[in-house]
Length: 379
Image (cartoon, rainbow, N blue to C red):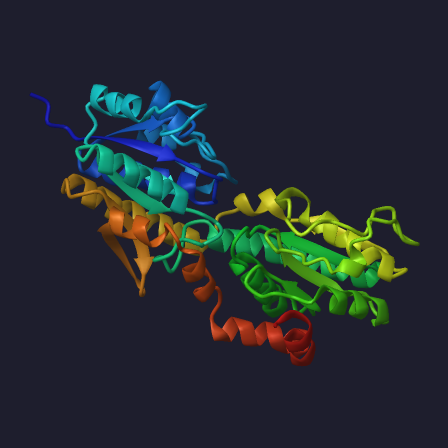
């Protein structure tokens, strides 16, 4: 009887730099333990369809330092309990058993963690070993996630380039970073751009800190030099009544109204539509977006990928309960997956509290003028 352990691998959600590196390290440590890896193509979709590929040292050698993506593919917003109106959880369980799996390594953010936990609760013998891989670093209970540091480095480079271009061409610039619920990437990328490239930043707009839009409009109208603004895609722009007329104003090709609810795909464009009528200086923008998911892997993300993979394989070989592999309080640790899933069910407030440390905040405040930071953006 063959007692070789067999484990699946799933990537879920938006890709983060370091996912391929984690796969290579998973394969390396699994091979040392004599275990076999089976990859599911395009995440949960592959589990539903039983669409697999064998993961070997040959197929993973060197992929750790590819510029981005995942060799297995990923999926976003696929809910196995309600996919196209159907519940595929039992199908997933049948796939798991038909492949004689001893567990599945899943890489993704808090949504991936919760879905794996729901499957585990419904089918206790279906085990998962979740690894935190999300560039937002917005998983409650984790101090760091794979992909965050590469995203910060990529964004910092764009911020510096745009800031220099704005000063050279005498135009305001707005750089939009990823960050739906938190401004962690935005604030750390801004800090790195200041420290590494020596540039000045005039405004930083993040979801956690409410800001006064009329004050920003007034500042852009009365500042004699080009401004550099860094923002998160998830900021909510409050539109006062006197700005919601919907009429086009002089020097503007866009209506002033943009609505209170933000469409993440157009946040930067809509902010420009509001600000442009208040200045004769052109406003140019750059959306870092998907550039943050790719690029050369940072040493910090390489370190996280290797140690998370090593611990995940160790836990899986021990056939322990479903675990979340995380970096917390300066150490790599495995906690029961349901504990982390519970933390992230209603984690909005937790994420806000963990938004940024005082050191980062003070650096940004020094650069942008403490007075305007307090009066214009914070309530």
